[in-house]
Length: 513
Image (cartoon, rainbow, N blue to C red):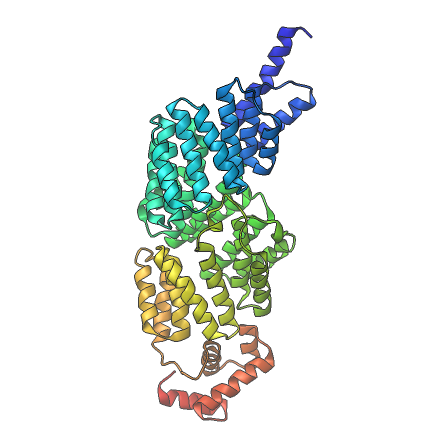
């Protein structure tokens, strides 16, 4: 083959690889490089460094060894600086911070341009966040802001959003992400990865925060006619699901289920499929579709048995907590199993997901534990878990989650303080299912509560007063016959009577029905 034709072929696959990288199709870019090597192509140093960048996006465990095998010569200071920069990033992600600092120092000595040195500062800040060193992250973020190019400004603002997240200042993080999106504007092609990340994170925050100004923006950005890359498929799934929750919190059940259907269509793992089906289970229950909810839950549990939960490294583990919550009133034993399974997995290992480092997942786990313990009539333990969840949700301004937790505390304790707190947190969600449940809970809460009865026993008492048989109560509560009969004995004793008829008469006399 003539030399000029060989150069043309080589340039062709290199261009295809760079194009895939710029489109944030990192898996495709890596595959092009791999295929080129199999075809005996001879990549130049620039292409090898591009492949290293690609591997850093996919898996630092592969990137670091590749870089160590492909070190540039000492004469090429610009390439050598890049090599040290990428090794610094990879070492940080592998949590070898001493090695990371040494490579960043070397890169800084080799770089001459303001933009290159600002990039080192940016990566140093990201490395500091991995070690939860906010002071260092702030210092390096100031250095990174020296890059005044359009992309430099986008990256610097996005970095500020990361720092706000680490500080658990989620409302500030949301405002920072709005600024990122404003800076990107219509230039998404030049900052596609930043746009993907900003839209995903803003959508998740829109689900959690009572900030109407971010609800519409997150949904509008998500619906821009752009095909999300395969590398960000999981982020697209999470964003769709989050906007489904936003719709539900606004009282739009139809919009909620539409987004959840879209999310399931793009789900790229069984664990994510389980999560979206559990969301549908939950919302089907809120609109009274009990059979639909039961079918969704059964299907989700079937898929959950195929998931290798111990191999998950990210937020998909929340699926186990949702399973615990949604099976608690159906089969407390199964709920206990799912909760124990989650706890056995330990902390999330990911260096990418924020949940690995802050208290949000701990609060969600505490809430799930409270739901399960309440279903098992372990009310003191449930109260302790709910109080722990409340403290976090209240502090970080996750208002609807705080309201949901306060409602659980109210149902157990019957202390009006919790109901008032729930109402306060739901002011931004007047048309949500939670607002409806809060009002219904207040109405039922005005009936005098029998202090000697647990919440489950109080439910049995109300069902007896409604004329329900023991078997009907067993079926409704999913409890064994002996368990329900023991509850009935306690109830009769609390009222000082021996029969159901006498119970109803005594309850009427006391004014509790």
